[in-house]
Image (cartoon, rainbow, N blue to C red; front, top):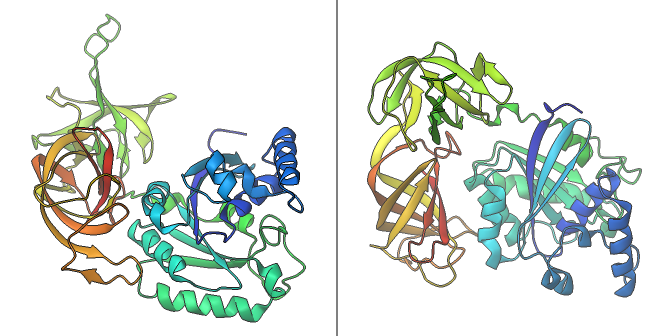
Length: 418
């Protein structure tokens, strides 16, 4: 298998006991991505607990407390690959009190799998997860209508859920929604097509994941290159070499491009681009590269290289939708934090909490300014030095920030710039 296989990141969301972990276990098992000894181990555990059959959910629920309660608490990442693609799965919890874990798992995903129990239909949790997926701008959503075996594979039940979800999703900012009837327990339409659903003509989940078009999920228009590190090898061979290393966050960079350096505003040209395999003519996100410029300028970590006529906003005042992570204290106005944005570390103060978002209805609670763990709120921040920002909708990398508590060094919030 070559290294050019595309990497797809997907996240699972759904209410408790909708079968998220079982679905992932089924994907891993049916696509032959687990070892025999792993299978034997969960088989033994299942038998010891007196369960019928093999509980595939045990493949992802790694924490002891998760297995005891039969729930998912933390984000579990699983990696597997097929000849077509590599996959990273974030198995995120369904409980309301773990919203922050879902935000973490979903922030880099291309696809969100939202599980719905065919018996219960679209519930509050389904709406919450769809809202978070739309806030985090996950490009593709797959609604897996699970436990079809418990409703006798009824097309009526499936149609009803599809209609109900589509009605709700119309209010959200989601572009691509797909519906698949499955049984994670029995394996219907997960990797293999099911004889039980002759009325369903779409792809299986695995086929969808292998073939969904993700190449254009990155922003290839707005050139953004945050500098991470300046490379100066003090050797005779590379006597005058000065390269700027980092990960391309947007746009395509080519040799000879006119670029502007922020914050100085100077303009120059790209002399060479070095990638993992040596010199290359162009680069695109999310490649890590080193750029050499035609002239010497004072550039350091946190500065940004952009296209001359397409620049981010340079500002010290930012508006964000923020998910609060800290369980020890609430977010308050006038609070001071360290803020990280791309490769920049600055300090900031909370100027104003505009409103709290009711995650179940999307209502703005303007009188409720008490922001506790797992709450999502719109907040205005003032930072100590200018940042080079885009809106999160335009670029998920230059549009996101995290806040860090300067005393404990804990990440206390993640924010999407509006």
